[in-house]
Length: 259
Image (cartoon, rainbow, N blue to C red):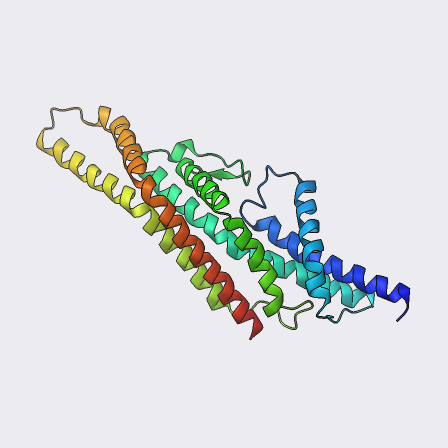
Protein backbone atom coordinates (compact mmCIF):
# COMPACT_ATOMS: atom_id res chain seq x y z
CA UNK A 1 0.00 0.00 0.00
CA UNK A 2 1.46 3.32 -1.07
CA UNK A 3 1.58 6.58 0.81
CA UNK A 4 -1.45 7.92 -1.06
CA UNK A 5 -3.54 4.88 -0.14
CA UNK A 6 -2.45 5.09 3.50
CA UNK A 7 -3.35 8.77 3.70
CA UNK A 8 -6.70 8.14 2.00
CA UNK A 9 -7.54 5.31 4.41
CA UNK A 10 -6.62 7.33 7.50
CA UNK A 11 -8.53 10.40 6.33
CA UNK A 12 -11.59 8.30 5.47
CA UNK A 13 -11.50 6.63 8.90
CA UNK A 14 -11.16 9.97 10.69
CA UNK A 15 -14.16 11.39 8.84
CA UNK A 16 -16.27 8.36 9.73
CA UNK A 17 -15.37 8.78 13.41
CA UNK A 18 -16.14 12.50 13.16
CA UNK A 19 -19.58 11.90 11.66
CA UNK A 20 -20.61 9.56 14.47
CA UNK A 21 -19.53 12.04 17.12
CA UNK A 22 -21.23 14.91 15.30
CA UNK A 23 -24.50 12.96 15.14
CA UNK A 24 -24.43 12.32 18.89
CA UNK A 25 -23.50 15.89 19.82
CA UNK A 26 -26.32 17.22 17.65
CA UNK A 27 -29.01 15.64 19.89
CA UNK A 28 -27.39 14.92 23.24
CA UNK A 29 -28.17 17.29 26.15
CA UNK A 30 -25.55 19.86 27.15
CA UNK A 31 -23.48 19.17 24.01
CA UNK A 32 -26.33 19.88 21.59
CA UNK A 33 -27.57 23.09 23.21
CA UNK A 34 -28.73 25.65 20.68
CA UNK A 35 -26.81 28.38 22.48
CA UNK A 36 -23.55 26.60 21.73
CA UNK A 37 -22.10 27.89 18.42
CA UNK A 38 -21.87 25.42 15.56
CA UNK A 39 -18.12 25.84 15.29
CA UNK A 40 -17.76 24.91 18.97
CA UNK A 41 -19.80 21.74 18.39
CA UNK A 42 -17.70 20.83 15.35
CA UNK A 43 -14.53 21.60 17.26
CA UNK A 44 -15.65 19.38 20.13
CA UNK A 45 -16.56 16.56 17.75
CA UNK A 46 -13.24 16.95 15.96
CA UNK A 47 -11.23 17.01 19.19
CA UNK A 48 -12.93 13.88 20.51
CA UNK A 49 -12.41 12.20 17.14
CA UNK A 50 -8.68 12.94 17.31
CA UNK A 51 -8.50 11.42 20.80
CA UNK A 52 -10.38 8.23 19.89
CA UNK A 53 -8.77 7.83 16.46
CA UNK A 54 -5.73 5.72 17.56
CA UNK A 55 -8.02 3.26 19.35
CA UNK A 56 -10.26 2.78 16.31
CA UNK A 57 -7.43 2.66 13.77
CA UNK A 58 -5.78 -0.15 15.74
CA UNK A 59 -8.73 -2.41 14.85
CA UNK A 60 -8.13 -1.80 11.11
CA UNK A 61 -11.79 -1.56 10.07
CA UNK A 62 -12.72 -2.23 6.46
CA UNK A 63 -13.44 1.02 4.63
CA UNK A 64 -14.69 1.02 1.03
CA UNK A 65 -12.57 2.93 -1.42
CA UNK A 66 -15.35 3.59 -3.94
CA UNK A 67 -17.37 6.79 -3.59
CA UNK A 68 -20.95 5.45 -3.39
CA UNK A 69 -20.20 2.65 -0.86
CA UNK A 70 -18.26 5.16 1.24
CA UNK A 71 -21.23 7.57 1.21
CA UNK A 72 -23.41 4.71 2.42
CA UNK A 73 -21.01 4.12 5.32
CA UNK A 74 -21.08 7.85 6.13
CA UNK A 75 -24.88 7.73 6.31
CA UNK A 76 -24.66 4.71 8.61
CA UNK A 77 -22.24 6.47 10.96
CA UNK A 78 -24.39 9.60 11.12
CA UNK A 79 -27.41 7.40 11.87
CA UNK A 80 -25.53 5.62 14.66
CA UNK A 81 -24.65 8.95 16.28
CA UNK A 82 -28.19 10.29 15.93
CA UNK A 83 -29.74 7.19 17.47
CA UNK A 84 -27.36 7.30 20.43
CA UNK A 85 -28.02 11.03 20.85
CA UNK A 86 -31.78 10.37 20.72
CA UNK A 87 -31.56 7.81 23.54
CA UNK A 88 -29.49 10.24 25.62
CA UNK A 89 -32.02 13.00 24.85
CA UNK A 90 -34.69 10.85 26.56
CA UNK A 91 -33.23 12.08 29.85
CA UNK A 92 -34.12 15.64 28.87
CA UNK A 93 -37.60 14.58 27.80
CA UNK A 94 -38.29 13.20 31.30
CA UNK A 95 -37.63 16.55 32.97
CA UNK A 96 -39.58 18.42 30.32
CA UNK A 97 -42.56 16.09 30.73
CA UNK A 98 -42.51 16.43 34.51
CA UNK A 99 -42.32 20.21 34.16
CA UNK A 100 -45.30 20.19 31.79
CA UNK A 101 -47.41 18.42 34.41
CA UNK A 102 -46.33 20.85 37.12
CA UNK A 103 -47.07 23.84 34.90
CA UNK A 104 -50.54 22.50 34.21
CA UNK A 105 -51.29 22.04 37.89
CA UNK A 106 -49.76 25.34 39.03
CA UNK A 107 -51.43 27.40 36.31
CA UNK A 108 -48.31 28.18 34.28
CA UNK A 109 -49.51 26.55 31.07
CA UNK A 110 -50.13 29.89 29.36
CA UNK A 111 -46.74 31.17 30.45
CA UNK A 112 -44.57 28.64 28.65
CA UNK A 113 -41.25 30.19 27.73
CA UNK A 114 -38.65 29.61 25.04
CA UNK A 115 -36.09 27.05 26.07
CA UNK A 116 -32.68 28.72 25.64
CA UNK A 117 -31.03 25.29 25.31
CA UNK A 118 -33.03 23.90 22.39
CA UNK A 119 -34.83 27.01 21.15
CA UNK A 120 -38.36 25.60 21.40
CA UNK A 121 -41.33 26.42 23.61
CA UNK A 122 -41.08 24.52 26.85
CA UNK A 123 -42.70 24.59 30.32
CA UNK A 124 -41.30 26.94 32.93
CA UNK A 125 -40.93 24.22 35.54
CA UNK A 126 -39.37 21.99 32.88
CA UNK A 127 -36.76 24.66 32.20
CA UNK A 128 -36.09 25.01 35.92
CA UNK A 129 -35.68 21.27 36.44
CA UNK A 130 -33.57 20.85 33.32
CA UNK A 131 -31.21 23.69 34.28
CA UNK A 132 -30.88 22.29 37.80
CA UNK A 133 -30.30 18.76 36.49
CA UNK A 134 -27.71 20.02 33.98
CA UNK A 135 -25.83 21.82 36.76
CA UNK A 136 -25.83 18.64 38.86
CA UNK A 137 -24.65 16.50 35.94
CA UNK A 138 -21.84 18.90 35.08
CA UNK A 139 -20.82 19.29 38.72
CA UNK A 140 -20.50 15.50 39.08
CA UNK A 141 -18.72 15.10 35.72
CA UNK A 142 -21.58 12.97 34.41
CA UNK A 143 -20.98 14.33 30.91
CA UNK A 144 -17.76 12.30 30.92
CA UNK A 145 -19.90 9.17 31.06
CA UNK A 146 -21.74 10.32 27.95
CA UNK A 147 -18.41 10.52 26.14
CA UNK A 148 -17.40 7.10 27.47
CA UNK A 149 -20.75 5.70 26.33
CA UNK A 150 -20.10 6.74 22.75
CA UNK A 151 -16.53 5.41 22.91
CA UNK A 152 -17.95 2.07 24.07
CA UNK A 153 -20.26 2.07 21.06
CA UNK A 154 -17.34 1.01 18.86
CA UNK A 155 -17.04 -2.22 20.86
CA UNK A 156 -20.65 -3.12 19.97
CA UNK A 157 -21.21 -1.19 16.74
CA UNK A 158 -18.01 -1.13 14.65
CA UNK A 159 -17.30 1.17 11.75
CA UNK A 160 -19.55 0.27 8.80
CA UNK A 161 -22.09 -1.79 10.81
CA UNK A 162 -23.73 -4.63 8.92
CA UNK A 163 -27.20 -3.91 10.30
CA UNK A 164 -29.25 -0.82 11.06
CA UNK A 165 -31.02 -0.12 14.36
CA UNK A 166 -34.10 -2.31 14.47
CA UNK A 167 -36.20 -3.50 17.36
CA UNK A 168 -39.18 -1.18 17.27
CA UNK A 169 -40.28 -2.66 20.60
CA UNK A 170 -37.19 -1.12 22.22
CA UNK A 171 -38.13 2.41 21.10
CA UNK A 172 -41.77 1.89 22.11
CA UNK A 173 -40.65 0.80 25.56
CA UNK A 174 -38.24 3.74 25.73
CA UNK A 175 -41.06 6.22 25.06
CA UNK A 176 -43.22 4.44 27.64
CA UNK A 177 -40.43 4.70 30.22
CA UNK A 178 -40.06 8.43 29.50
CA UNK A 179 -43.78 9.04 30.13
CA UNK A 180 -43.90 6.91 33.28
CA UNK A 181 -40.73 8.43 34.77
CA UNK A 182 -41.93 11.97 34.01
CA UNK A 183 -45.14 11.22 35.92
CA UNK A 184 -43.20 9.67 38.81
CA UNK A 185 -40.90 12.70 38.99
CA UNK A 186 -43.81 15.14 39.10
CA UNK A 187 -46.29 13.13 41.17
CA UNK A 188 -45.22 14.37 44.68
CA UNK A 189 -45.85 18.03 43.89
CA UNK A 190 -48.61 17.28 41.37
CA UNK A 191 -50.46 15.06 43.86
CA UNK A 192 -50.19 17.57 46.69
CA UNK A 193 -51.58 20.33 44.46
CA UNK A 194 -54.37 18.03 43.31
CA UNK A 195 -55.32 17.31 46.92
CA UNK A 196 -55.32 21.05 47.62
CA UNK A 197 -57.68 21.54 44.66
CA UNK A 198 -60.04 18.97 46.15
CA UNK A 199 -59.88 20.78 49.49
CA UNK A 200 -60.62 24.13 47.87
CA UNK A 201 -63.58 22.60 46.02
CA UNK A 202 -65.01 21.15 49.23
CA UNK A 203 -64.49 24.46 51.04
CA UNK A 204 -66.27 26.42 48.29
CA UNK A 205 -69.20 24.01 48.46
CA UNK A 206 -69.35 24.17 52.24
CA UNK A 207 -69.10 27.97 52.51
CA UNK A 208 -70.35 29.36 49.17
CA UNK A 209 -70.30 32.92 50.56
CA UNK A 210 -66.52 32.93 50.40
CA UNK A 211 -65.07 34.11 47.09
CA UNK A 212 -62.39 31.46 47.37
CA UNK A 213 -61.40 31.45 43.70
CA UNK A 214 -60.18 35.04 43.85
CA UNK A 215 -57.29 34.03 46.10
CA UNK A 216 -56.81 30.35 45.26
CA UNK A 217 -54.59 30.88 42.22
CA UNK A 218 -51.79 32.93 43.85
CA UNK A 219 -51.96 30.75 46.97
CA UNK A 220 -51.71 27.66 44.76
CA UNK A 221 -48.62 29.03 43.02
CA UNK A 222 -46.97 29.87 46.35
CA UNK A 223 -47.86 26.43 47.69
CA UNK A 224 -46.37 24.83 44.58
CA UNK A 225 -43.11 26.73 44.97
CA UNK A 226 -42.91 25.73 48.64
CA UNK A 227 -43.33 22.08 47.68
CA UNK A 228 -40.66 22.40 44.98
CA UNK A 229 -38.31 24.00 47.50
CA UNK A 230 -38.89 21.15 49.96
CA UNK A 231 -38.28 18.60 47.18
CA UNK A 232 -34.92 20.05 46.08
CA UNK A 233 -32.86 18.01 48.62
CA UNK A 234 -34.21 14.83 47.01
CA UNK A 235 -33.80 16.07 43.45
CA UNK A 236 -30.13 15.11 43.21
CA UNK A 237 -30.86 11.48 44.03
CA UNK A 238 -33.62 11.46 41.40
CA UNK A 239 -31.26 12.88 38.77
CA UNK A 240 -28.63 10.26 39.63
CA UNK A 241 -31.19 7.45 39.35
CA UNK A 242 -32.51 8.73 36.01
CA UNK A 243 -28.99 9.13 34.64
CA UNK A 244 -28.14 5.54 35.60
CA UNK A 245 -31.32 4.38 33.87
CA UNK A 246 -30.34 6.36 30.78
CA UNK A 247 -26.94 4.65 30.71
CA UNK A 248 -28.67 1.25 30.96
CA UNK A 249 -30.90 2.18 28.01
CA UNK A 250 -27.80 2.96 25.95
CA UNK A 251 -26.28 -0.40 26.89
CA UNK A 252 -29.51 -2.16 25.87
CA UNK A 253 -29.36 -0.31 22.56
CA UNK A 254 -25.80 -1.48 21.95
CA UNK A 255 -26.58 -5.08 22.85
CA UNK A 256 -29.69 -5.13 20.67
CA UNK A 257 -27.82 -3.53 17.76
CA UNK A 258 -25.05 -6.12 17.97
CA UNK A 259 -27.46 -9.05 17.67
